[in-house]
Amino acid sequence: MKRDRLERSPRLYLSEIISYIEIIEAITKGLTYQAFVNDVRNVYSVDDLIRNIGEAVRVLAKHGKVKQLFYRYRIPYADLSDMRTDLTHEYFSMNTKAIWETATQTLPKLKSQFKKILDELHTSR
Image: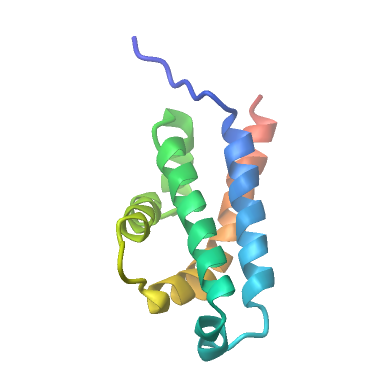
């Protein structure tokens, strides 16, 4: 029987996802889209953090219990993982609009859902 095994704790991955979202919120706070794209440091920083979130979500989705929690809390794990792939393989261009929308609309809404999953994993030890 195949076991759900991760090299690192799912709680650690989830804590990192929440931390990355909070960093993204700090970077984008008070910015307009134009101000965001005018500073390449912001764009590349947020791009990298979204990729990290996508990779963590991709790994977590392989863990049966976490995947069930993703369904329960309506985490669009496939979309986040696909975005990571898209960002990684955009060699000569960058979709700053998609990065901005993910950073300012999608991820802040999901932060509380990730926190609920983390809390549930803490209580089900």
